[in-house]
Length: 407
Length: 230
Image (tube, each protein chain N blue to C red):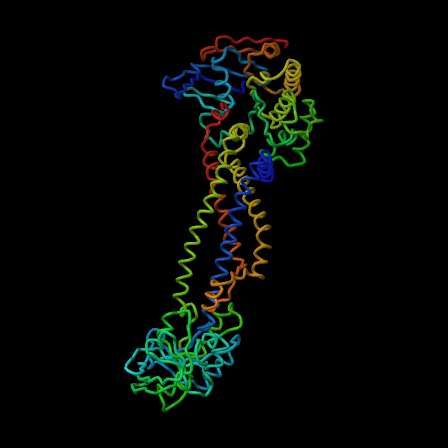
């Protein structure tokens, strides 16, 4: 094997320029692929981070709530529940949420809205909701105001200081109703939220849906310190909370986002395919030329007693060496660049920056340096190169020695 | 004792519209230690016969025995293995492996035979010494003259201690001095190791050294002379 490797290595360097050009095509393809994937995955990570920041890594509900989001599937916060959440290792903090649907009315206008009861301080720390308030002021603890989306305010023809009437179904079939002053109007990136959502203090929301006993929640968003521990924490919580509660991860809550990422990723993969086809043709054309050039050498080797299957290894080694060479050069070039960009993402300015900020994203183009990006792209290139070696393998196993001598 | 026995072989090439009969009923016996030249005009069937003797091609009809083995009974893989252990080749255009040095080229065949490293290096150097090119052991073929390359080819052919060596026009690309030197070396190997050589040649100088001259024309043997005392 060592001699076969030596022959392959020396064969490659007999035509130094061709070998360098082939390795360069591998380098170029891999470098571009890594840059593209690093940027793509960096953006995905940012989107997921922003999404998770809103909904939590895990959500605890009453069992069945996620599939049937009715106020009747709300639950009362208990000390036992609080203790379990507090004692579970890895949880950094939790946010209580109470959400229900209701009719909102002002003057002669009425509209169905989503009421979201939140802890104003904790929510603001998590999502910077106060930063989205464009008129009036953000919610205060122990005050009974509400903030609503700008489109909803526009529809209801309301302004800061007006009084909103809410009427809907409360917990266990009671009628929920109340009047609340509008303390602020917000603008979020999602038009749906601007059209539909009313935020209020969680205690106000609890009192709205069930004034007889305070403490009702539809969910608790759970935030963890180390995302890699997600599955373990989910398992622990599920076991400790028992069958009355369901614990779902952000992957379920943000399934739409994941779907969007998946589709974007698919378009990225098409670009990658084009890049890899270029690289594969580069390798294949070299392999083809080398095979044709060495017909006579192959014929001699078989004549003197070398088995064809051993000869095949020379071709495999040649293809592998040139690919590995390209891969190594690419990694040497791109790794420090991506590491630098990971630490110093490209800042965005102007409208683009504003758009990112509106979506709660940092105005940067982030780069990911996750190992799987490097491993997967390198493995794909090496597999492609080995596929290119099929031609000489087939050729060597079939070619006519005497014909090769004649050529 | 015959090491090669060719029995009524025919070779027909069907690669063109009109079939070409390259060999038309050849019978031949080669004894161990012979230094035989197969001569004849171009297209007479010399190379075809040599290819069949060397197990690189098989006859369309007839049998070829190397000692007790009928080459027609061997699979492609068995034939390759048979060549490795029984037949040495010297080609017209040297055909050394261009990326290996003279020593590595000679050693390569021993490596295929799985001879231990130390032994094969020693043997390769002995053979290069015997063909007078030990000082060029670390040179690649591109750094050697035609005559020097052909000496390496002879050393390579001898390295596996084959039953016989096939040489197809080995002097065709050599100048007269190199030809004489090479023939001397092969004659010396024939005397020293009792190696059997079979040449296909047009070269009178080769014929002058041969112990036996088999003349072939139109795919048939038309003459077979033995010269005692050469």
